[in-house]
Every structure is written in C-alpha cells, then in structure tokens.
Length: 413
Image 1 (tube, helix red, strand yellow):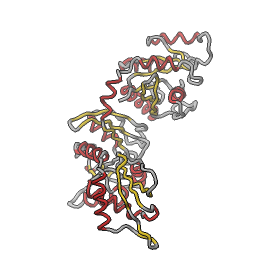
Image 2 (cartoon, rainbow, N blue to C red; image 1 turned 90 degrees about the horizontal axis):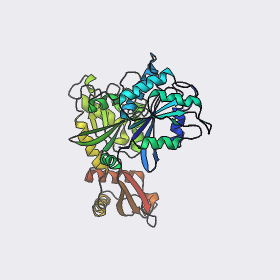
Image 3 (cartoon, rainbow, N blue to C red; image 1 turned 45 degrees about the horizontal axis):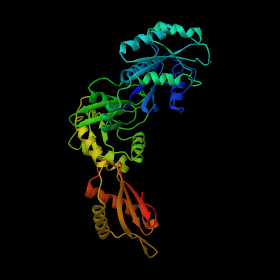
Image 4 (cartoon, helix red, strand yellow; image 1 turned 180 degrees about the vertical axis):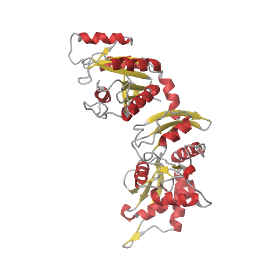
C-alpha cells in the first residue's frame, strides 16, 4: 500500500488549507470554526516521484466532553495509528499552547515518525521570533510553512519522504483485492470490518454518521490478501431488520454504474425470527428491490456473532475472479451464433438486425463489443438477451457486464 501522511494538530491551525495546497484541489472544508472538518478526508498526491495518501484529520481537542469533538479525536487517533509519518501542524500566530503540548505527547506515545511544521509563516525574510519556541516541544527542528502561499511545503514533503519505506515493499501489497464495504448508516459496516480484522479499528456507535470517513485496513489470511475500505459517507449494505430501502437502492446503483463486482450482504440476520422459508422470502425481497443487480450473490450474515463472515472471503475471491474473466473471440462467437439461432434478431420495417461478430475489449467489468449492420435495430431487450446468454455460458457471477454496440465501419473499443 502507498505510504500514508496524516496532518494532525489542534483546531484552526490550518490543516485543511495545507491539505488543499499539497493535493492541489479543494477537497477539504476550510472555515474558521473549530470542528468544521469532522472526519478524515483522503487525497492522493506525489512528491519527487513517490505517490502517497494524505489525510486531513479533524482538529484534536485533547480533553473534551462534547460527543462530536471526542469522536473527532478518536478519528484522528485512528489516522495516527495508520500513518507512515505524521505532520504535526502548529500556528505561529497563537504561539505554543498547552493543547499543542498535549497533542505532542499523544503523538510521541504513538511511536510514529513526526515532522513538526509551524504554519502561518507568511512573510519571507527573518523568521518570526515566536517560531523558535516550538523547539520546546522536543520534536526536533520545526519547518516554517505557509499553507496560504505554499512557502516551505517542499521542505516539509522532503522531511516526510525520508520516513517512507522502500518502493519495493509497496508493490508487494498491490495484488491485494480492494473491498469497499458500503451501506446506509448503522447497517453494521464498521462492525463487519472489525469482526474481520479481529480488533476495534473503527469506531462503532449507534449514532448515525459516527464513521464519517473511509478507513483502509490491510488484511491477509489463507484465502488471500485484502484491503478493506470501510466507507462512511456512502450508503448501502443491507440490514435484515429493515429490508431493502430506497437508500440501499441508490448506493447499490452507484456500485453497479461504476462497473464494480458486488456481493449483497444482508447483516443482522441474528435479529430475525426465522422459519423454513424466511431466507427465501428475504432473498426474493432483495432481488425485487435490486432488480438491476441480479448477478450479485446474496450472503446472510451477522457481523455481531460472526455467522457466515468467513464465507465472505470465498465470495470476494470468486466475484473478483469473475470480473477479470477473459473469453476468446472464438468462444464468444459460437455463443453468439447459438443465441441467434434460438432467438432471431429483431427487425424493423423489413430491415433485420445482422450481428457479425463479438469480441472482448476489457475486464473489471468484462466489456464486449458487438459489431452489427445497424445499431438502431439493436433493441435493449435483445442486448439483455445476449447478456443472459453470456452469463448462462460463462458464469460472470457478481460482476456487471458492459456491452457496446458498433455499426460496421466504426472503431472497436
């Protein structure tokens, strides 16, 4: 996995502005109110040929009874645990505060490499005398930066880079299957990830929106290597106590439109009173609610008790392989010939659709191009029929299929 750099500090020292300056896009909310960035915001960037993930954490208030502020502190703590290196950002205008010292203590306890940065050093020339008091934190030489103007950001990134592992180590993990756990709030996404990882990596609470960001967790077992991404802002995944809701349909639609292999996981199965037909009824309800995703396998689990969670790995492997399936042009065209014999292509005003051949041009999802005499005659229902023929022959379970129609003379792809 790529190195992770977390920007940490108390509220209003300019973390979001520095994050936006380093990413080059305005991804973070910038406003002069404590607690505006409530969650971690992730961005990808690079410096001197090394790409890395940058995290903007919510401001750390070392001691607070406010529920959201304490969640923010917990979120920042998780960012610290996952970081390769931490940028500890302070503010020359307020000088060194007691809160800075407490945050420094928390960071030192983490044992992670820390790069100390003093923000709002906006004028060039001799440094502000208050800059030197940050040496008192005992974190080595502070780096003067201006998040507004970008001064000092190169020195800052150079300092971070020295703590990155060698590039070869990154490549080893790139073959891991990336699994996004998506669903509406409180469907049990974080509980499922925690059950898989066997540790409380993700905050779990019954307050909707507790996990406000995406958290990546690397995991390896006898079934393979996986990176689980517990998403918060996106909403899907099914809660058996509620059935399929409109939110579920919307979020499932996002995965479908993005062409991602999917598994429909029905959680909280332990809370349902069951008889011999309960699972079949629920399966039918899910299929009706998500009619556009009939290809996705359905798994009934309980993240709380761990029931059938092990089975998830086999399914993840299976649908990932299905999405990577490559089919030879020869095999595709024999299926195509058979399909046309069984159901004749449609015609309109005496002109009949002629399909010449089909070839695969991509994977994840499998992407097929079909060449014909007139794409206007290629009705959606016949496309659906061909897709079903492909699925019946080659499986392709768990993955959407893309079918592109080309008139002869148009380019492939």
